Amino acid sequence: MNMPQNEGLKNAEKAEYDSMVSQISPKPTYLKNFLWAFVIGGLICMTGQIILNSLIKSGMDLKAAGSMTSVILIFLAALFTGLGLYDELAKKAGAGTIVPITGFANAIVASAMEFKREGYIFGVGARIFTVAGPTLVFGFVISVIIGLIKFLI
Amino acid sequence: MVPLYMSFFVGGILCLIGQMIMDFTKPKITPGHILVGYITIGAIISGLGLYQPLVDIAGAGATVPLSGFGHLLAQGAIEAADKRGVLGAFSGGVEATAAGITAAIVFGYVAAVLFNPKS
Amino acid sequence: MAAPKKRGMQTIVFDNPPCLTSWASIVGPKEGEGPWGNSFDVRLNDNLLGEKTWEKAESKLLQDTVSLALSKRGFEIDDVEVFLAGDLLNQLASANFAARTLNIPFLGLYGACSTMAESLIVGAMILDGGFCERVIAATSSHHYSAERQYRFPVEQGVQRSLTAQWTVTGSGAVVLEKGVLGPKIKSATIGKIVDRGQDDANNMGAAMAPVASDTIKMHHLDLNLQPDYYDLVITGDLGSVGAALVRQLFNRDGLVPKPNYSDCGILIFDEKQDVHAGGSGCGCSAVMLCGPLLAKMQRGELNKLLFVATGALMSPTTTFQGETIPCIAHAVAIENQ
Image (tube, rainbow over all chains, first blue to last red; front, side, top):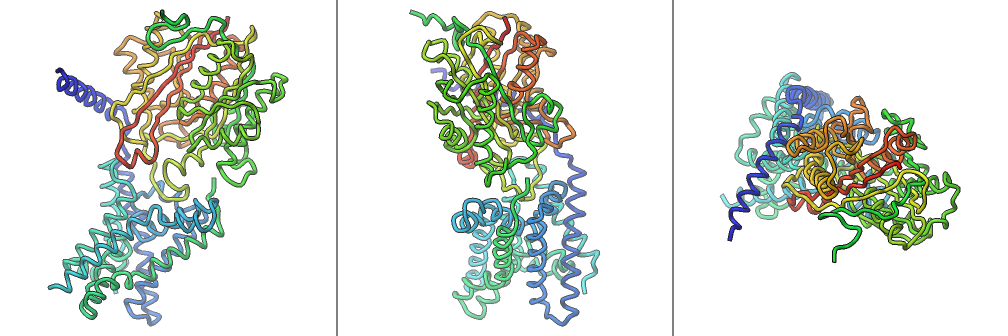
C-alpha cells in the first residue's frame, strides 16, 4: 500500500540526480555559437542574393531567378558535402548551415552518400530522405491545407 | 534591388533564432526538428500574408532560409487554388518548389555516385 | 543451500582463478594519436582496413585482434575452445562475421560498451566450472559503423553536444587459461540494470554513472572490502561528465578515494582531439585493458585492478519512442599473485 510513497521517493531521487547532471554537464558556448550561426547564415543568404542579382541582370524574371538561385545553392551544398567540407563548417556554424536551403540539401546528400554501400536502390534510393523526408511531408501537407483554405474562402 | 547587407542581416537573424532554439532546448530540438519547423512555420506565416513583406525588404535573406521554402509552398498553393480550385490546392505547392526538390534529389544521387563519406 | 562460489547479492569468486595469459589491442588512427597510442599493439593508418564497408572493417579488426592475441601465446586458432565476443552493431554483426571466419565454438554476447567485462566473466565461469581449458574473450567497436547506426550520416552537418562522446575504433582480446601464468581473475560482480531516467543519447556518461557506482558499491559490500582495496578502479566509458558524477556518488557513499579511480573514456583521448566528453564504445574499455592496463599489471606497476565496463543499452528505436536509457556495469577483479 506504500506505492505512491515509493513513486514520490523515486521522483525525488530523479530530480536530485537531474540537478547533479545539469550542474556537471558543460553548457553550449552560447555566445560563440550565436555569432557563428549569424555570420555564416548571413553569408550564405548574401551569396544567394549575389547569385539572384546577377541572374536578374542577365534578364531572367524574378520568379525564375529565385528558383535558379535555389538550384545553384543546392548544387554548391552538394559539392561541399561530397568533398567533406560542409560538415566541417557546420560544426562551427550550427543553425547557420542548417536553416538555409543548403542545410536541406546537405541532409539529403549526406544520407545518400552514407547508404551507398547498401546499394543504389535500397541504399541510396530508399534512404535519401531519412533526414529531409519529414520536411517534405509537413511542407506538402501544410501547403495543401493552405491551398484548400484559400479555395474555400 | 535589395541591398546585400539587408539579406545578410535578415538571413543571419533567421539562422541565429534557429541556433538559440537548439541551444536553449538541448537535447530536445534537433536539426531535423529545425528543418521541419522552419518550413511549416514559414508556410503558415506566408499563408497569413506576412512573409511577403519580409521578402520585399530582405530578398534572399528571407527566401534562402527554409522558412522561404515554406513561403514558396504556401504561395504556390494559394495562386494555383485561385486559378484551378481544388486541383490547384493540391498541385500548386509542389509545382512552385519542384526545381529545388528535384535538384536536391539529383545532386544527392550524383554525389553518392561520385563521393564516399570521408573518415 | 547457498551456491559455494557466490558472495553476497551479486558477486562470484573463483576457486581456481583463471589467468589472463595473452592479450592484444588494435586501434584506429585517431586512438593511435591519443596519449596511450604507443601502448597498443597495432595502430591502424586507415579506418577501413582495406575493406569496402565500415562493418566489414570492424569485423576484420576483431578477427585480427583475436589472431594477434593467440599468436602472442604461440597458439593456433583451434587451440582455444570457445570464442566469446560481442559488439555494438545490430544482431552483433561484427562478432558473428568474425566467428564465421574463425570457425570455433562461439557465444555472442551483447552488453553494449560493457561487453569486455561480460565476456571476461562468462569466460572465467567456463574455466572455473571445468568446462574448458582455454577460451578467448574479445570485443570491438568502430566509430563510423556505430555513428551511422545510432546517430547521423557522417557528412551531415551537425554540432555535436559538449557532453557527447566519441565511439572508439578498436578491439581488444584476452586469452583466458587455467594455470599459473599472468594476472588472475579473482572475482566478479554481475551488474543490475539501473535507469535514473536519463534520456539524452548525447550524454551517456550521465546515464551510466549511477550504475557504475552501484556495481562498485555492491562489489565492495559483497566481498567486504575496504574502499581503497584496489590500486585502481577503472570504469569503461563514463567520459568527463560521467566520471565527475561518479566521483560525487563515491564521496556520498564513502567509496573509492579519488587517486584510486579513473575512466578509460577520459584516458584514451587527449582534450585537444576534439572528442568533447571522451571516448565510448566496447572498444574503449577493451583496448585500454588489453593495452596499457594489463601491461602495467605485467610490469608489477599495478597489482589489484577493478575493471568496471559500463554499457548504455538503448537502441535508436527506443530513443525515438522517448524511452529512457537502461544502463549496466559489470566489475571484474584482476589481481597479480
